[in-house]
Figure (tube, rainbow, N blue to C red):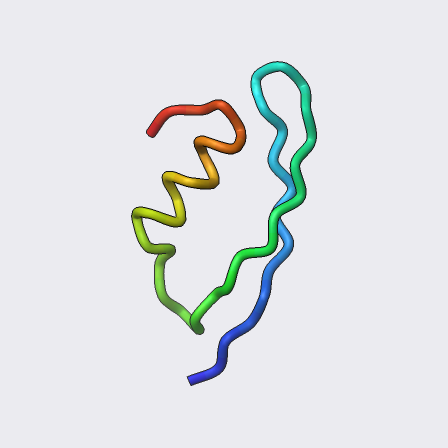
Length: 46
């Protein structure tokens, strides 16, 4: 299995720009904890 790092640009509600690096495992969805952390960093709610 290949693991790739993906850079994600997130714009939060207050206009801040966050750049995060997320490990992506082939064709799989993000784990709910990873997704929740991304949303939390952007001040968004799942």
